[in-house]
Image (tube, rainbow, N blue to C red):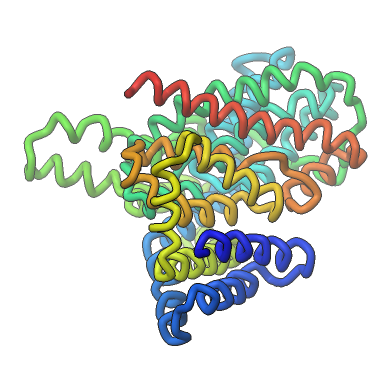
Length: 436
């Protein structure tokens, strides 16, 4: 009975968001209350669960998301992303522009949200396409595949970060495994699939041609790369070095401190604030950061709503019911997590909602099956990228920038996202067979 109620709750959530067009946060609250009553919980218990779920979910990720938005705003305004793209183009030449943008997308996508990375790099792709008479989609899709993979798989992006916290997974190990899985996924969905896109010669929207900053208006290459990669470097050094240091020493504690995502992101924002000033006053640099917070405010509501539903399901005993069911299930836990995330993604359209909602359902599997929580994060992340279509804002953003028909958008963008999802699951299963 609890599983039937849960399924009906998911269907109701999907209908409220995609059919009724109710605000996502309101839909989560409505379904949380309805599911709680159906599970036999007392009204005050439901309210307590909702409050607990919102608080526990937001408490661990709010500061990281806010800092990530600030870093993205600083990188966007300073020209650091353009500097990285220019350096990559100079290194590989226009003949291999798609490879330059693919690598740039990966580097920029590591610390920045997908929408921020898209807004930074898509105008550069369009500008290069016009300037060098290149097919914009052919050189741009590998970059978009990189951004999608980093958004779906890797912390400190919102959904993977929230799942890492919920599963109590090791952040550095998840990032390390994620990069291993991400590289072949990008090559398959971006580089390999992108080879078939030369025939799409429709001119992109000229309104999005990037303002071409002069050499002296951009930060140096060293500063640009260091600013973007600093959070990853701090987390990576902490993960790799700490196990070899004596316990409770100053250097060990310092590296553990710097390796915490909120600390590493804070350090990156501070470094960006001062290193990317380019003659501006401190107030001029930091003033737009308020707008950066506005850009991600909706994410906080989505996460809070998903956390509320998760906690209501937990209070109603659904987690235990799922755990009991999975003891006799023939599906591998990673496949189950991937499939559930993929179903919600296709139905609702949001990879964030898909990932964070699925995490609440599969949490009991970690204890029952003993699977690696880091790999479960990646399998859910891969599922959350499945087949983006008309209910996903990314679909329309892509179509608007590259001026494609609806059919061609489905044949290019939607297929690319599907390949990101399937290749991600395949990578998780291969990596699991190697490490176990």
